[in-house]
Image: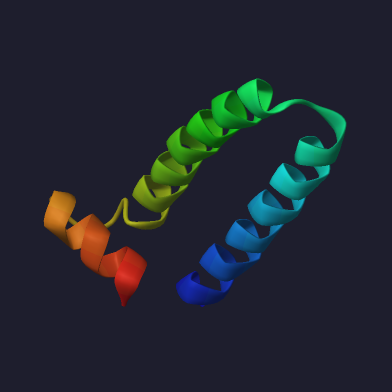
Length: 64
């Protein structure tokens, strides 16, 4: 279930970035990617809130 949520979230981020890329220039896009990375990290932390994880655990969750 958590993986499905993560996949849906990732897809929406990719779609948003592709739309923004067509509208705005690359400088804005790089800023947007930075914001999305922060949001994604926060989202993963919220998913994992009931578990005690370190950075390695977060990376393993991403690539699992």
